[in-house]
Length: 432
Image 1 (cartoon, helix red, strand yellow):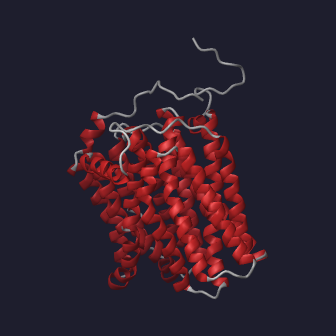
Image 2: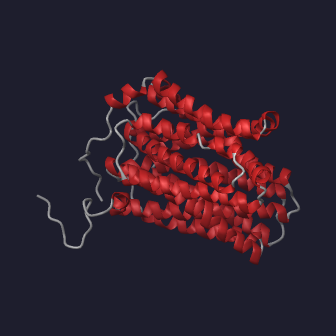
Image 3: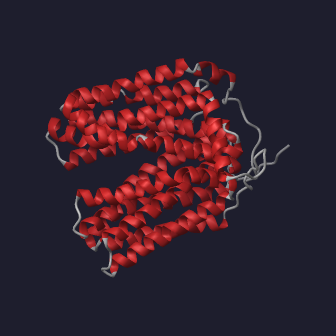
């Protein structure tokens, strides 16, 4: 029989989205992640205006952005191996140390007036490479500190923090600092925020990394093991194949063509584009809250793919309407459904992937998501010019629906999810 102390919140008295915060180490990790995302929002805006301060334009900014993306892509699979082979707390601490050093170096060069474009490109490459080690280690650490039935809520917390801290608060403060002082002030703010992200990690405790069944091997051997698991696991292969095609179809229109749709169809300018982006961010927060407040649906694979696939259908409205509020409403729905699917996906990985493979599978997920991103953005402009914005957005909204149905039926995911239920109560719980 358990005795509950008066005034102490228990799993039954806490709302479901708040239950992970019962655990001390999760609270520390969540605070660290919040500051880290906030710092990244500062950093992303600061480097844009630092490029401009150096006299650069779109081509120079593309060079710096490409350097960051290259660092991320080249390192992401190695980040998964590190998450499975090394203590994850040490990996997370190392990431923040690298970010602090990089942002600190950029601040020093900017405030001293010594910054050159190649300096910024090299620093952006290093920051991008460090970012590749963060998510696999974070994703693999969660199941070691939380009961399985609280992972959905924890992934919902991440889904809420990202748009609020990284896409809203961080950029807002960066804009104020750049406007009042100089880009160097925003770079300094990013460095200080990364320090705040490091401090909780220093007192956090994590369970040791789970050993593999075959003992320690080579890095290439670890990569082969992760890839072999991906190929032979039907639900994982189907979902990542769907996700890669989804990125190809929708990301370019969202990132490249929406500003032109807002301008040409509604007559609005930057404020209208900002409204659409804000609507998407608000939708992501709402979707994360909805997903984290409930349980995993019994048909979790079907729901997840339909949320992504059918949830993209409102993109068709982007090319058909001349009303800004309708564009905002479409972006809101896409944000809600996409965030709900992402919360289910993160939880699904943590529940069904063997612990000793979770870092590598998470990095493979990250890699697949990144692989076709530049292709989609490169194709969006020419396709939009050739077909016109209305047809391009109609295709971007319709194709994902058919991709989702093909994945569900082609890999018989409706059978897999029933054979491997995740909605049953879980009694095992890590120590708080």
